[in-house]
Image (cartoon, rainbow, N blue to C red; front, side):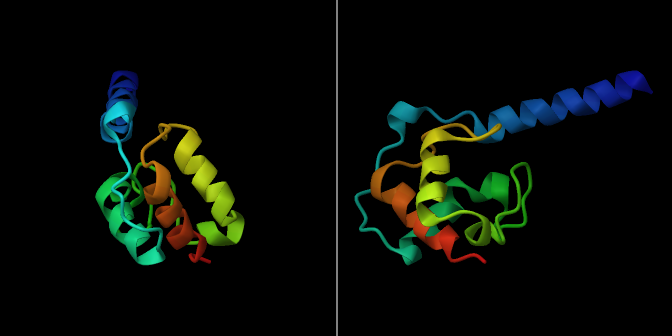
Length: 108
């Protein structure tokens, strides 16, 4: 029983590292799109939904359904840039990070 539990925990950790931590920050460039909440939703679905869910429900990463009630747009942008917990830093950069932060800040 202990071996099964250990296998499950280890597998979950590997999945987290593979899904969220495998980005190469040097290859993550800003798309050049202007800052907007509409772009933020699109970019979220491309870069963040695999961990946070397409409906913000949380999968490996936490639910973001009410993230705007907890954090300001600037705080969200800082988390995107710096990472937090198992979320790596620099998943999005520049205007892309600002757009996703603007969109997520509306989720209250």
